[in-house]
Image (cartoon, rainbow, N blue to C red; front, side, top):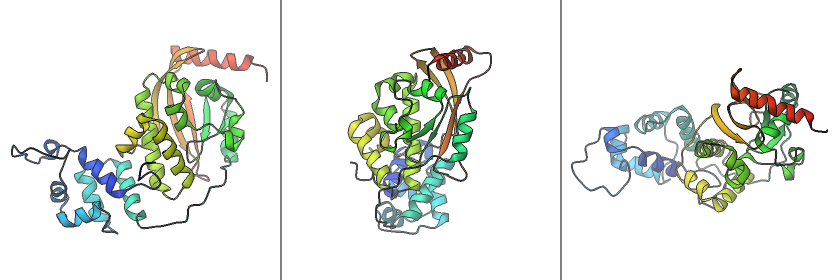
Length: 290
């Protein structure tokens, strides 16, 4: 397992973020020298952020804690972080030094309100995901669209629940489903980064990250980038084995009562071939014996 898999490292995130900023983008002159590091040097970033080089070095090396909001904002601006990345930076900084005894989490139970909403979406493929991307429930059309090769009742058994992150990286059928698998995989990893930042003490989440890192070189490479991504809405083109190619808009809605659970829907534009394909899939699902 990667050394930073169980929690998440503020220093690793800062190093990866400054490695992505070129001197040209930051307006830092090169003076023709040969650089031994990718992106910005520590002293260059500290100068841009208006903090001392020694302080920033201690912060990145984990030797200094409790960075002020002003320092974090200055670093975020210098690193050109977006809103999700800024939030992630603050969570990593405020959570450092907090040691909690890892405990195995109780199996997640789907929010009854989300269950009721899921049942009403008869014409919209939908599923409920838990904190670690476990499928807690799906409607028949959601199952048929995303995982028709799996048992429909698998989400009802905690130990057998499909995990969407594992499916994306380890399941050949799911990999073939997404036309732009790279975009989907980046979104999955970016979302997991945010979740780890929110729940650094979650041992089950750490085990998931460790398993994916050991089982998938693609996941390990993306995880090493330390990129975070909040993806509430995204378009994906699917190569479905039953109804062919269609493009769906994936939307993620978070439960207020159970903020770790999300309802994920997949819709198509009316009157398009994708809508016709989804309608055909609904007919196929409806014709199956119960």
